[in-house]
Length: 404
Image 1 (cartoon, rainbow, N blue to C red):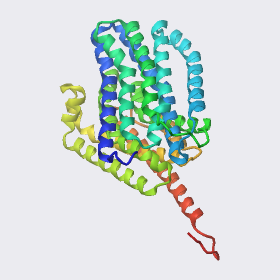
Image 2: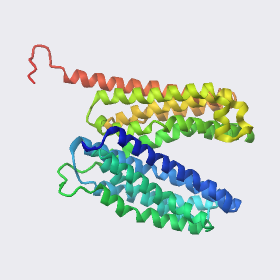
Image 3: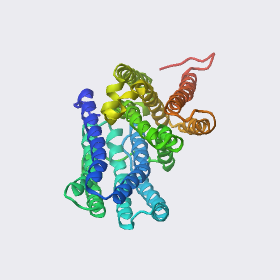
């Protein structure tokens, strides 16, 4: 972040860009429900879910580039970006034909969704450069531009009455067209790359951690779909709106903190945990005080009677918000398996839901809360051990004199 960028202004700008991205992502299925046939709407929802999973590669690339630049300064990111895009494209070339056959998806729409995803993954390079350089105002602009390219074209197509394929065609075009704009935003004339290039392993680690965070935070929704009656699973889906709200509301803190976490700034970690934790407490308290209203806003009057469960859903999201700060701190510190605890907790949650938990809304919801608490505890222990080891390594051996 440049000295002229106030941290408060930067935080507001990044938050606004995140709100825009989430709003556009929400508008796509809402418009689709009003303009597409049921079959095309189902295909659109499925493709959005698939591209969200593939888009994890973009976040992994962004985090890896940001951490590397924060640690080592300007360095070449071309090789890591090309490799990430190539691997993602190769994976989609294998997965998408299978999805077409198994999920009965239309071929043209599936191909166009894949093209759009390639653009999103490539964008992670320039977003990471701006984040690592702490240029948060250009980063906010880049996030907004990418959201416009990723979703804006599809929204425009649906609003104009285009069908599924035509809307995704417009979206694919806009997703690719915004890439030169991101390149211009990230470019710093006169700055010559001097550091070593970003390692492929760093991108893989960050991407794997991002995927683990996505899976563990969505596991309860999938388990509810599997074990609960249709009506109850629908009500559970409304509850997870509160979970995601408590989870994503403070994520701007993690974005702003990541470069300094990469530089080993323990004070930044404490401050980030305090801010995210305080936000979670406030949102959970608000959910407890106005649970009926929270469910009414999330899903309508039919769900207001579930208000007593609102603090459970909000607390789950709040705990995962803190977990995500700790996992990003582990990634920034170069930990080998920062996502390990999350995969273990996910597996334990699935087994518990299958064998132990009551197959009721409350049973799955409290199981998800317990899983979030377990993820927080295990991740916090790993971070604590790493920090203790770092302090020990900095202390001089007995009988020596430390000169600074």
